[in-house]
Image (tube, rainbow over the protein chains, first blue to last red):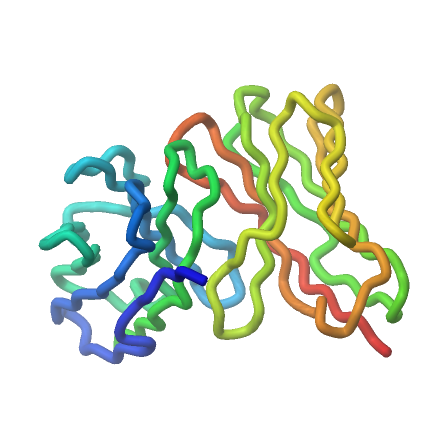
Length: 114
Length: 111
């Protein structure tokens, strides 16, 4: 069964450092998303990406964040200068259709900022 | 208006029982309502979804009941099994790419 793959599974970084979280979406999907989940809390939308551009972003997704699809398979989330409050599970998702329909999530990257 | 309220926060059910999780929303423009199941350390997995033009959708032991006038929808798990023990999230989408999640329900099914 096709799945969304995320690497690394766990990333520890010092405050102020840049991190790049990587995702390989399901191959025939066209819509890509990043969500985050602070420990014990609900899943929150960060950004959606279609046709090589951001289609929607939340208020959380400020200038410290950026997304990129550098080639035909990878989808990355970059946090330029990490803060303690960026510590969370980050989930990549992809969907064959728009409107969040049938969005499949990866297993997540646990980001710990120390 | 963008919130999805979910209850209960936790639920304990005996094996073979019915688990019921409820969600409520305010924005009548929401047009897609999925339920996700999440096991510890894993990402949310799509379980079942419904659109507001139907009142019920059933897939195996899982049923979504949708009440458009009350702006509520619920997940029913029939014949609950220990393997169903997980956190369940309802969500809603506003014809956009953003899923708005509820706060989650931790379900524990005891043998």
